[in-house]
Image (cartoon, rainbow, N blue to C red; front, side):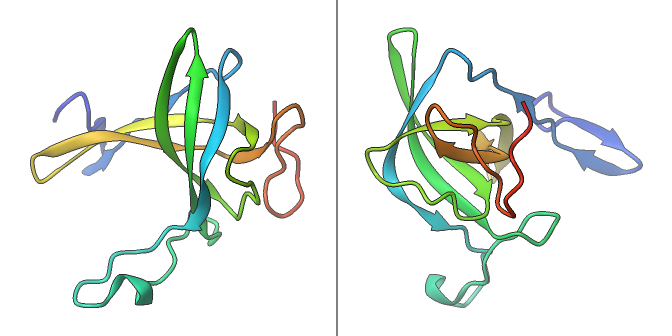
Length: 133
């Protein structure tokens, strides 16, 4: 078992989600949000079913530039529910985590947030509940 894939628990591999402190970062939306799709072999991408989280909520992907300490990085972040943000908008990101992944000799980092919303305002999770601090 590699450090990237986490730890074993009851015969199942658990992946570690690493929390990211966003208090010193700024985020700029660089592409319109899009719903994530569940891969279905033999079907065209347009017909794939939407990907959902554990609560059955559709996951959306938002491409952001993370700005901080004189550096910038483009990241793609999955978030439950349509974040309703526009290209060029500065946003706040709540509950951001990073999760290392490895598949077929490739590896990378997947980013997930509990909510993404207008900068300076508390992001609102879908369903109307405000994101926790």
